[in-house]
Image (cartoon, rainbow, N blue to C red; front, side, top):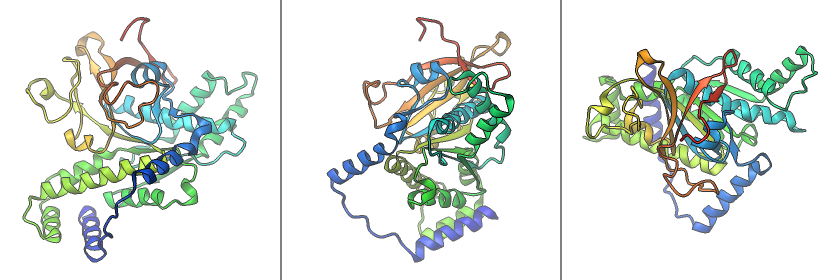
Length: 350
């Protein structure tokens, strides 16, 4: 019923208050707007790292995720979560060297599984392994540093697609809250998209009626998702914010049984992880990263990070063109007791 109510409210608003007709924009104006957005965080560098050198330098290149793009992390639940949490931690840790720390990260919790204890544990581990912390500091000083980092992170919980777009709408409104926002982590977007695409006959009938169309409800829903995906990408570009969208994939052999599977597939035939939500999720992201598992289950399978899609617009010095990072990969593992990722590439691999 929450889904139906949200859908009815959204479609009713569109019906009675249609958006104004979009006017053409000069190319020069768009260029100036993007250059101005990129200058927002010039003092912090143009990349946000995951804390794992093999991912940041070998897979992503340049030291991490570039700002102003939408990244999709698809695959294994635990590792995918760690990648996003470590990126958030990197932004929070940058405040420790700033004379005027501000809120710089936003976590939008959709799954209800957000763990502030895990995030604080990651920040603590990163502090202990970095040069930001004086090794002579007492344990209570370490906790003060962790608390300082957590104070720069906002957490919103949403329960439906309307709530998500309301939160994102507050970003585009240019409020003081987002004047220094660097990263937005949406966890887990798959929950909302799956509910939209699931078999809810009443909701589909309502959508078809409101749109006054004979198109199939599935098609109408996909059209709506496509529009929101493009809106999200434009928001990332305009504000130079890194968006990370996480979805959880399941094990499947479908990708390697079909000639043309309905989604991008791993380069490893033994990878049993198929990207969740197929091509629907691809619409939302410019850089699509798959966290998979390579090898037989009985032979200590290895976790692998690989790039499925690379359409990020900022080529930079480290990239040779669109798609240049596709099929790049690296094996990773979780450092014992630290909940941070470590690379497993040997010199000369990859």
